[in-house]
Image 1 (cartoon, rainbow, N blue to C red):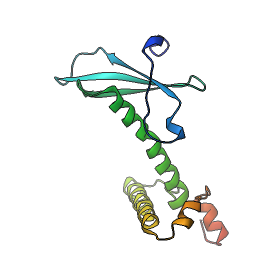
Image 2 (cartoon, rainbow, N blue to C red; image 1 turned 90 degrees about the vertical axis):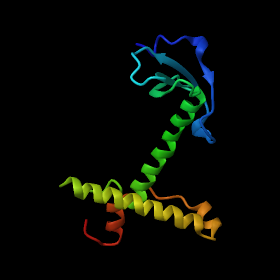
Image 3 (tube, one colour; image 1 turned 45 degrees about the vertical axis):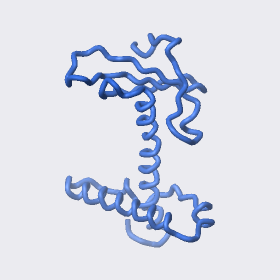
Image 4 (cartoon, one colour; image 1 turned 180 degrees about the vertical axis):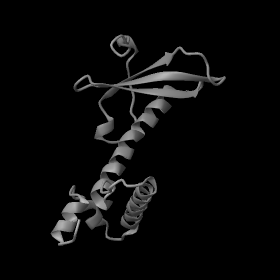
Length: 154
């Protein structure tokens, strides 16, 4: 309901980073009128509208009064980087290949997968073979497909 009632005149164009996925959006920030939880801070509703299909996404922001709306947009743009890291971790190091039997087992698996992904990123950045790195396109197959191709159990 709140999203449908946004004033058309308050939309503005802002970039949340380089790249095609971060272009083509209009933004609007609306202060949420709730009692101040922390003195000098405010809550905002940041709304992102796709110019291609009009799809709306919203973020609840809690920040000092003097934080610019562009800073909210920049932080919202980090979402794509995080999503890409999770997708790469799933395909490269099996982040999603676990069976939850205990919290500690799950936590160890997730931690190890994230460390393995970080190691791969560091090694690829330090590699002198930049031509191969630039042509590298990670496969989207899972760990189970990898194991099957090599005749391993799992």
